Every structure is written in C-alpha cells, then in structure tokens.
Length: 442
Image 1 (cartoon, rainbow, N blue to C red):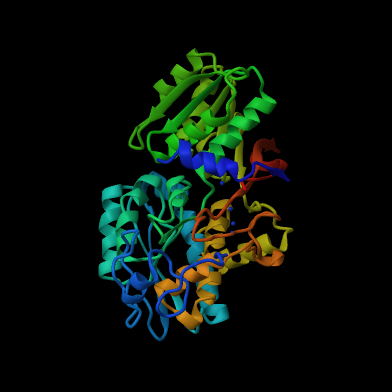
Image 2: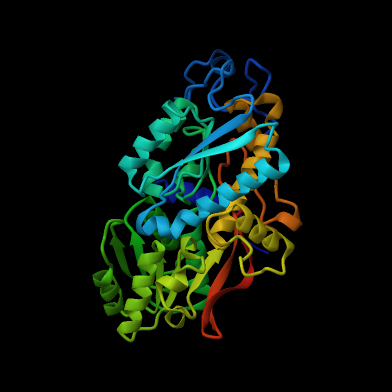
C-alpha cells in the first residue's frame, strides 16, 4: 500500500484551511460530570451544560430530543430534485434502504427504529438553512446525518455546532470539516478530503506524465479551491507546469468557455473538480474540438451514471478515485447482499452511489449501537470517537479491503484510503475498473 504519511494532512491544514466509499478516542480526554469523555471544552462546562471554550452548547441529557421509547429520529438536508437530485439522490436511497433493512430485519438499534427525515434543500445554501432549522427546531432530530454539498453544508454547520447537534458523515470532502475539530466538535466528515485528493492527483501527474502541461476546471467554492490547493502543493513546476486555472459557479449553465481557455494553453492533463454534469460537458466539449487530454475527474463522479452524462466512447481513459467496491461486482457476497437490500427496500437500482449510502448507514448503525447505554448526543459523540480502524464484516463491507475508519477528537476525517479507477469501453458499454494500489492518506 502506498502511504503519504500524516505530514500530508498537516500540510493540508496550513495550505488549504478554507473538504472519494468507508476510521477511537484518545486516552487523555477530560471527563465530564457524568464520568464520560468530554466532547470539547472544560469538564465543568460539560457538567453544567454551559457554553464550552469552543463556543458550542452542551444540551441537557434529561430530555433528549429525537429519542423516544420506540424511535431514534435522524435528519438530513439532501438534494432530491432537479439535476443535482438526479445525480446524488441514489446515495440517500441507499442510506434509507439500509435503515429500513435494520428496522425490519434486525429490530432497529437499541430496541428502537431508526427514522430518517430527509429534507430537499435543492442544493441551495439558503434552502439548506431553512430545512435544517425545521429539522432541529420542529422535528427535534437527535442528529444530522450526511448533509450533502460543500456550499449547502457550509451554511448550516455553525448552527448545528452551536446547538450541540451531532453533525455526522458530512457528504462533502471539504477540508474544513476535519481541519479544526476543536472549533466544530460536533461535525465529522465522511468523504475523503478534497485537498488530499488534489495532492494525490498532482503526485500521479508528476510520476506518470512528466513534462505534461496541466489545466484545472474547478467549482468556485471550498470544494474546488481545496482540490486546486492540494494540486499546487505537490505539482512540481519543473516537471509539470500548471498552465490554466478555470473556475465556474455552481449555477452556471455550461463551461464551454472555460474548456476552450484550457485547450488554448496546450494542457495535456486536465483535472475536473466538478459535479458529474460539468465533468461530462468538459469531456464531451474536448472531444468535439478534437482535443484529447488525460482527464482526471473528481471522485464525486465515480458512479456509472457518468456514462449517461457523457458517452462511453468519449469517457474511455478518464481517471477518477474511489474507496468502495463496485456495484457490478455481484460475485462479491457483500455487493450481492447490497443488491438484495436495494431490491427489497430501495427506490432505485443498486449502484456505486447507493453503496456509498449503505456505508453511511452501516457507520451510523455501529455508533448508535455503541450508544445504547448512554443514548444522548454526548454519548453518540463518544461512540464516534471510539471508532478505531473500524471496518464492516468482509461479507457485508461495501468498502475496499484495507479501507477502515478511525475517528478521534483531534481527527474528524473518516475516509483516508482510495484507489484510481479508469473508464473503459467493454462491449460498447462504459465501465469503471480499478488500477494501481490502495493509497493511504495517513
């Protein structure tokens, strides 16, 4: 296994303090008034429920919102309609299907059913604020799970931390989710850090395309800027010149002008820190211009759905990254089991994105199960911080062998291992195939 070493993450904290499916607490934590490890701040502040040094509020545990005798109520702001909904709603479907499986076939968790209330925020930060407040203040959720989107979640994570709501498995790889756990002790990321992804892409280019000119198309938010910063941190200008940096807004209709600008610089390798539709526009646009750079697209586009956004023929040779098994591996017992769950409880067919949703579901089931004797928000965070090299049973693991999860109060990045995928044309159909070794970000 290739290893980049923890210094990469330290460098990420310096350079990219601005975010590819799969990770326990320290021994020196202070204890609160109940004898459990404090999430943040002083022991006295935790015991009394007063504001902590990090500025969060510890909720009372006498009457815990979101917990009844029969239910554990979770919430999520998650795009479910429009173009972005078509792309990413399968993740939500996979998570819901797994919770339904747990409820129906395992009796839930802690003798309670898991209820997931997911509100459509339409990938809009203002809407995310509206639906998150409703989930917290009206629906009284116990925890937020997998809020999706860098811009949308950026609009609500301060609020969730101020309220002391566990904000788990954020469905975005923005570096900031894990960069400063002391300031945001209730937030834990899920997807691999975008800064680290950019550094991996840069390292790959330097090693495999020495001398090639490089261009990047990125979404103009924390996500795209993190990838750009990571790329710049390792790309050796003596070997590979970064000749074009083109950004687009998430509301843009198309990116044709940006793609043309990159082409005119003579770029031979192009990074796309883009949503699937924009990556497809860039790849299709380059093909129409007779331009064939090596495209490396973001892991958020690593699902077979990419072959419906762009034709399999023009996608051939494109690279991306992932941490999970592929949904086409139906000979794998875990993948076959996922297909069964989706057929029985899902609303869409099994795919790479639904498997990501199940990974989150399995993580949530695990930490809730560790909380049964202390079913409070503080207890839930203690359980999250107890995850050390956690991986599901191989027969039920959606993640690749070697991918595990470790969370501590000082490290809130869940997924830190990935492999490259290459798009290939097989019998006229587009498929993703893994190549190379698992890359560890530790």
